[in-house]
Length: 193
Image (cartoon, rainbow, N blue to C red):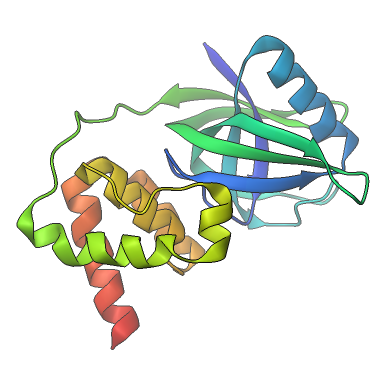
């Protein structure tokens, strides 16, 4: 049985993507301490209803991404800043809320297909990723602008493109990199029209 603490956010995290967070709530500080002590990850799930701060009725997506802490620092404002990297996708099976309001879930890991090399038809999408990687906020996260396989390209674009949350969640549920890239092409064409 796989149990994960959950961090519901209005952001959708993808494998390989990096996310910078500022932590101030006691429940998440405790969660991060445990993750660092146990060399464990936590689950980032897309928040569908409610607020990211404690209280209220939260609804979040049934599919999420495990996050691992890759860097942390005490910020000038005294709060903890962390950078996480997306690892594995999962499906939430059972969900509970602890006394400190930390959400926890039993999850099943989704299987990833073996990496497939980029094809000629991915040239335009690879160029879009290269352009996105030149943005200062992406450079700060240390995400690469050049990747070598369809899975990495699809996840990086799904994360970095300015898509609606519903589209990002849809992309997170697609198990085939080729199908995910085809859907991204459709969304890019729709954005450009």
